Amino acid sequence: MATHRAGRCLAEVGGTAGLVGIGTGAIVLAGEVGGAPPAALAVAWFAAVLVPIWGFVRYSGAHLNPAVTLALAASGRFAWAEVPEYWGSQFAGAFLGSAAVWSLVGDGHHLGATVPSHGSVLGVFFAEAGFTALLVAAVFVLADRGEGRFRWRLALPPAAVGVSTWVIGPWTGSSLNPARSVAPAVLSGTYTDLGVYLLAAPLAALAVAAFWRPRSVDVTDRGVGRANVAR
Image (cartoon, rainbow, N blue to C red):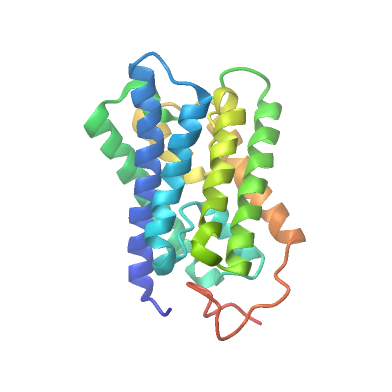
C-alpha cells in the first residue's frame, strides 16, 4: 500500500506515543500503588507494543523504535532515505507519550525511565543487547513473512518485549528502544547509565541485520517504506 511519507511519519509519532504512554504509564501507576509483579508489567508492555502495531502497521510499518528502523534499513528491508524522518518521528512520539504520562498520572518514579537496579553496567549492556536482538528477529520474521493468517504474527514483537520486561525488567528496566529511554530520562532529569541503553540497542540491531539478510525483496510487494530499497 502506497502511503504518503508525511502520513507514515504521523503514524510513527502516534504509534510511538502510544507505546511509551501505555508502557511507562503502567510503570508510574505501579509505583504509586507500591509496585507490581514483573508478569503484570510484562502484560502491560505486551499491550503497549501490540496496540500501536495493530493500529499503524499498514500505514508506517509500525517500527516505533529507532533500533528497529536501523535494523530494517541496514538489512535491506527499508529505505535509508526514510530513516532520519522515522527517527525524528519516533523521538517526537516518545516525548509526547512521556509528557502525557506526566500530565495524566504525575512525574513519579522518574516517568518510567530505564535505570539499572543492580549489577554491572556491562551486564546491563549484554542483557539489553540480547533482548533487542530477539525483538529485531521477531520484526524480521514479520517483515519477511507478512502478518500471517488472522494477523497472528503481529504479536511476535510485542511478545519479545513482554518476555524482556518479565525477565530483565526488574534489573535493567527493559528498554530495547532508544526513544523509549531518552524521553522519560530527559523529562525527569534522570540520566543514570543512559548511554548503556543508547549503545546496546543499536549495536544489537546492526548485528542481527548483518547476519540476517532477506533472501529476496519482492519489488512488487516491498511493504511500507520499502519502495526505494536498492536491489
